[in-house]
Image 1 (cartoon, rainbow, N blue to C red):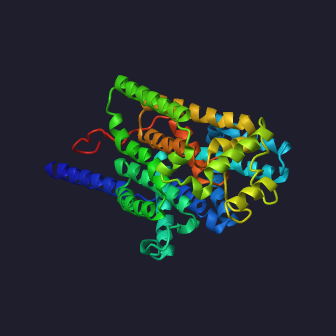
Image 2 (cartoon, one colour):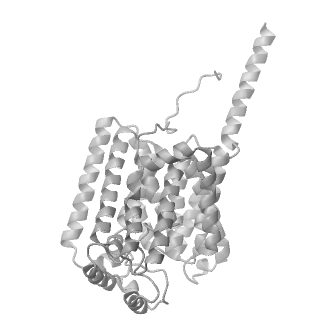
Image 3 (cartoon, rainbow, N blue to C red):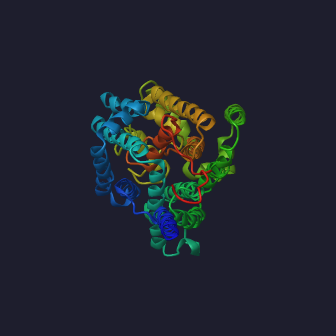
Length: 429
């Protein structure tokens, strides 16, 4: 009898150790591999082009085929995210370049659908760890391609994107993800070790990219990733009070800036964004002129920055860049208004407001790591929108993450928090 009890205890301890080992070094499943491969291709689109775009789409077809009912329900459940893409699609009817607008808007709709599936068909923990791994590989590759040139002060680090702003954005996203993974006790041990290394890689990339704007506007998001986990320990009333106070502060700040700051160039200089470098003040002035020419509907989705369009050619010449170079009005709301008029601008403002309400609701009633991640992303996407255009384009990581904010801010699905796991018994049951 005693021998039997000892054997059972030994088997129990071995099973417990095996469970811990599997938890630390579990083999990635189909969802993780598909998500990782798709996101890796997404990050490489600027370098590889159309083949990467096709490979970005392919894995989601497999995941949708595996669970078509859930995929269809996710699209319906997150239908408001299609307001802007649908209006962009309709705009081909009055676009100055209807064929291009039609193609671009269809790709925009597909990107939105994939983003919804990324937030719904795989768990937040899977998506976050897969994206972190993809970004870590991409940014390490960027450092290798640089060959140490940026460390020798031969120019900013450009990475695989050939753009310091794109590199800074992806490095910041990597840093936010790494912080979330390190905090999450339910992540595999190996993944948390990767996250620690990713923090170092992302920090180096941010510094060497020499993008003050990414650091300044990303700082609140970083702080949120660090402080929000403790937020879940507070009672509901305390959470509600803090969220309400933050909302009042943010709204008051936005109103104060809009009402009292007249010299936009001075503000940009203070944030490390020299207005004379890209002529933001002149771009904004010209954007208002173009909006007045088609105030309600705009010129059509992505129909302004086209080779051969005289106003666009004028601005490319002003900025001393070649025709067709990636360019925008460095203000999301003006950029959207030029393309889609005041209706489009109203839709993006409504989307931001709706997201903010969902986030506040989730932070108060259902705080969890996905919600904290969404809140950190939202703080960056919103603040950067006044000086950059990061979202509302097809096959863009920023657009995928913008939709992820919406999906993760919903509280329909329960999420077991790994911040404060339940105590284990001495022996597994």
